[in-house]
Each structure stands twice: as C-alpha cells, then as structure tokens.
Image 1 (cartoon, rainbow over the protein chains, first blue to last red):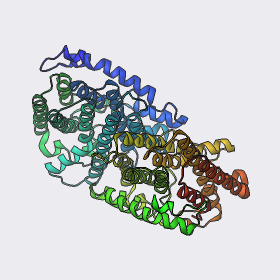
Image 2 (cartoon, helix red, strand yellow):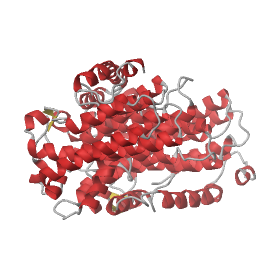
Image 3 (cartoon, rainbow over the protein chains, first blue to last red):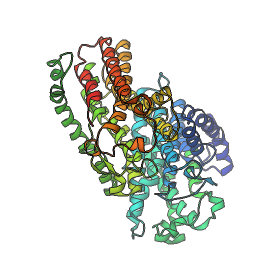
Length: 307
Length: 307
C-alpha cells in the first residue's frame, strides 16, 4: 500500500512502475519457488518448476496485487491469489505448446516443457499446476477467511474453465481458416486471454472489502485490459521478432488464424489498443477507489509493451 | 439417511447396495447432465459431456455420498462434491488415454475422447473438467457454507495434484520396465488411484460435523479401499476380458508395468485384497459412527466387482 500511495501520480512512467513492482515480483518469485513442485515426484516436480519459474512477465500476479492494494486487501490472500493465477497461466502455456495444439518448441526463449521433459510429463505437469492453483488458495489455518478462500476458488475456476480460458482456446482451435468477424474474434479473446486477466483483477478485489460500484468498475478495467492485451499480442506477432518475443513470431499469420491485425489492419489494431487503454483508465476513474495508481500503470504497460 | 438406516445390516448384499445407490446414482447423473459442458463452446461442451455422462461406476460419487450420510452431511454439498470427484476422475481418464500417455482407443466400451473429438479438444475438455470440479464446489448463495466450500476445494486439490493423482501418474510413467518392490508399488498406487478415492471419503465427511476419531477412521477406510481398488484392478487386468472390462484388458502386462499380480502372484493379490477389505471394515468399526452400512457395502463392492 505505502509504496503505491507515495507515487499516486495520474500516470506512471515505466521506471516508476518498476519501483512498485520490483518488491512484489520478488515476493511472487520467492513464493512460487517455495510452493511449486517441491514435494512432487522428481521429474514431475522438475517439469512444474521449469514451466513456472524464472520466466514470464507475471502480469496476472501484478494485476492481483495491484487490485488488492486498491481495496486494502489481505496481503497473504493476495500473494496466494497472485501465484494461483500464474500457475493457471503457466499450465495453459504448457498444454498450448503440446504437439496436438500449437506444437511450439520455443517459449520465453527456452525449449518448451514437452521438448525438455517429454509430452507425457508436460501433460501431467500442466494438470498438476492447475490443481496446485486451487491448493494454494485454500490453506489451513485462519490467515485467510473461508469466505475469501471460497470466492477466490470460484473466480479462478470460472476464469480458467469452459466459459473462460479453456473455452476460448476451444473456439480458437475451431476458428483456424474461418473468417470471424470482429464480434466473434472479440468473444474468442474475451474468453481465451481476457477471462484470466479480468479474473486476476477480480481476485485481487476479492482479497479486501469492495463496494459494488468499485467491483463493477474493476471488472470493466479488467475486461478492457484483457482485450487490449490480446490486441497488442496480435500487433507484436506481426511487428516483433522471435528473439524479442521469446517465442515464435508470425505464427498466427502462418497458421491463417484470424487476428485483430488481419481484421483491422495494423493502424486499426493500434487505435483499438489505445481506445481500450482509455476505457480501462475511465473505469478506474469511476471506481471511487483512492489508490489506483498501480492499476493505471499496469494498463499502460499492457498497451506499451514490446514483448 | 433414512434409506440407509432402514438397511443397517452389518453386511449388505449386492441387491441391497443397488437399492441404496439407485436414487443416489440418479441424482448424480441428473446433476452431471445439468452441470457439465452446458454453456461451453459447442465442440468442447460435447467432448466434456461425452467424457463424463452415461458411463462409469460412479464409485467416487457414491463414496462421497455414503461418507456424507454417515456424518449427517449437507445434502447439497455432498451432491456437488460427488460430482466434482467424478469430474476429476473423468478428466484423468481423458488425459490418460491420449496418445502421449496410454494411447488407448477404448474406454467404457466406447471410442476414447480423443478418437472421437481429436487430441486437442480432448486435452482441453480434460482441462475444463478439472476447472469445473472446483467451480461446482464454490456456488454463490448460502446453501453451502464458505468453510465447507473451502475445505472441499482443499481436499480435492490435494487429492488431484502432484502429491495425489497426478503425482502417482508421473511415478507410473517413470516405472515402466523398472522393478518396483511392494512398498514402491503401494506408494505409486496410494497416489495414483488411492488419493482420489480416499479424498472422496474425506470430502463426504467434510459435508457434515465429524469428530477427530471418526475422521481418522474414515481416512483409514479410504486408504484401505483406495489400495484395494488398485489391487483388484490389477487382478481384473489379468482375469477379465476387454468386453467385460469395457477397456483393453491385459495392457499392464503388455506394457511390462509392475502390478500386484506380477509382484504377489494372483493368489497373493487376492489375499491382499481380502486383507484390505478387512482393514476398511475394521476402520469403520472404530469410527464411532452409527450408520456406516453404505460405506461397508461399497467396500465389498470394490473388492468383489468383476469390472
């Protein structure tokens, strides 16, 4: 809270965001390292840790932590929720990279999990990471109230499941080579990428007391940056090289997948991203929350990132 | 409760068990049909429903419901927990059947999910079923207390994850062609099959008030029948034909996998199963619970089944 409060400018620059996020990222990395795959059978534990540790922007954890700070949330709950969202994200990447899905060999600049550990252990590592996410949310003891635990599980399950991330991936699978219009493309991404990003914001909000007005505004913020994230992903798939991205660039175009760039053109997609950023910031303005500086900065980061 | 109480004989026969389980099975099937894949994108929803509906013995749901009845548990919570355990079981079968795992084409007498829907949708259907299990456990409203919801999520996550089912599958993977001793084989199965069966009993117990003594006894019961289930599976893999089993018989021997039969011989494995049944019943005797008739009958069913 205090770090963010002292930097409550209307718009953070990248350096200021780094100052806020650095200790949070250190906490998240440390917690993930303590919690992921430690008591698992050897190869499975190794595959789980490889999939999760030392990589990734940790955008979802940062959204959880920023939203929790905005509502004065339970710090222990927020850290667990932050890690849980990252585990769901990491498992989805492991499964998405498998030969029967995208068949990708490079992720975050390293061999993908199935290249390194084999397909069977990659499959199981993904499965175990999903279970671990819910285990992290439900610790014994009284540090986190049962009501918060149950709400966090509900939000994460919905964000991850058939009406969230997994559902979006299924629509994505079915849409290769199909001419989607913008509404259909938006719906696919709202589920595939947006649901977990929005869910991260809602999970952060669930760590503290939050008014209906603020929750509604935070949902709007989450929906806007969720979609913005995908629009920017589509832009980067065209404009960035594989080394900068840490994954194979240009693969959507190669697979004849519909993207915001193929639908709106590069300039249109960029305009869309700016509009969504404006929508996200407007949502924060109407939240009534005093300290939304970190959430603002993260919205800028989502749109201005180069990987 | 009442159905079981009127049949509180020390040992039920199969016909009596059917009388108890029939309405419960109807409730479970009806609930699964209402809850699984209904609002999912079309192909994904179809694959989820195909994986779950109209098949399987529903042993895990019956264990949840019997344990819940034994402690006078919340009926709504028990039904959701029952369905959640079956979703985890069903997802594990879908993933286990994939080409990169057991590469099985027949399950419950039907083509496996990936044969019918393709590998990618099978993978996603399994992932979505796991998420749905946790969604079922965390409904909004006040029918099930947050404390019960959180406990059920905790028990299920542990039973399903790297120190439960997924961990056991990883050990299984790594053990093909390796000479395991009985302790190692027992540990593998304690995780791979036992954890979710024992977890089902514990989840049922978590639906009601339960003393420490009773909970400890129910855990012992769950551990014994969890292991017994696998011993009997190994026996049936040798003695039954594929048509009766509804899946490919003899595949463990063909894969040179260690089993209780390969380790103890057929007679030794049968003796082991009888001993575990006795252990399970003895645990119920020391539980102090008045109505354990259904749990007793299920223990017999686990050991005496022919498929």
